[in-house]
Length: 213
Image 1 (cartoon, one colour):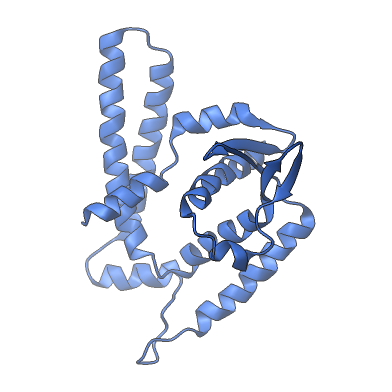
Image 2 (cartoon, helix red, strand yellow; image 1 turned 135 degrees about the horizontal axis):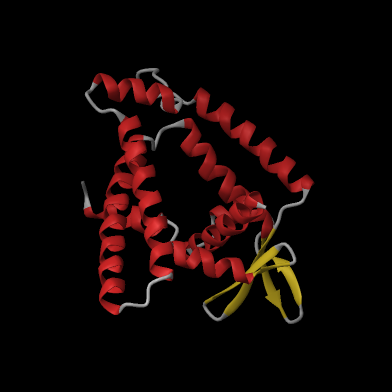
């Protein structure tokens, strides 16, 4: 596995501690954050915005289904189709996904234990174990991401998240807030991918916490 893939997976895995910190930042159906000394916020989407995302996703789905390679074969397929293809090659992706879930639960349990521990040697032992587990999670995640990079579900999920972000990302200007992007196409051309990456993380925090209520 390429080091770049592992690095990418590590960067995309939400840190549980940061997630807990984010919970405290959420107020008035929004979450604020700073980036390059500027203040931004993510707001919960309106019903109209959710409908817009859904319509855009349906259009994207049709585009994915129509895309073919030079031999006329489908470029994008559903996850179950990819699972069958890889199973025929001796790779059981269900096993990898199950292992990933188990490791994630193990990390969550250790984080809870860490929060209740005051003994310094025990804290260091738990922290090392968490770090080791996160490295394993990163490697397995990178492997799964690579196998599903042309899955319709994976592509649609990322598309939906980024499209939604283009609607709900705002920047503070004086005492007022204004949308950063006028459209999804404008965001696609935005040169600072760092802002998009950070904003997507906070969008995930906000939506996950909203769904858990």
